[in-house]
Amino acid sequence: MARITLITGGMRSGKSAQALDIASKYQKKLFIATAEPLDEELEERIERHRKERDSSYTTVEEPVRIAPVLKEAKNGYMADVVVLDCLTLWLGNIFHKEGDMVDTNIKDFLDALRASPCRTIIVTNELGMGVVPVSKDTRRFVDTCGRLNSSVAALSTEVILMVSGIPIFIKKG
Image 1 (cartoon, rainbow, N blue to C red):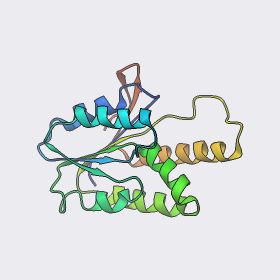
Image 2: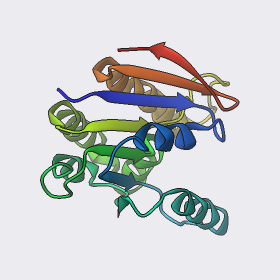
Image 3: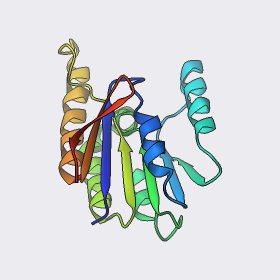
């Protein structure tokens, strides 16, 4: 099984920068971007992230079907390392576009991750450290994200919590 690193933390905590730093040691890089430019602020954020990556990255913008991309990382994209940014946005896309297929998409992703022949670095958000959401749908999303993050962490050889730009190693393999 390939080495998997999960990087979690709050918004603007340095998760993406940490992922790119780890990936910088590899020659052939695949970046799976899950964000969609739904508003002006998100468009600016996506553009800022694009500029942070150099030409050694092949970027696939895929908001929903990340399992097939992950499966093709080594042979189809010739990648040595995959950066997936961000698992939380991907889950939000699944909830929005395919609400009844959440469990199927998560299973497919976890199966692809288990079989990944490449070093894989996954960025996610730590949502469970705040107040309990008022809305039932938001609670379902936060709960599902927590379970997804736990499942990925269990598969990971390394888990990093980013706090104010500082990596704290929760699991080091």
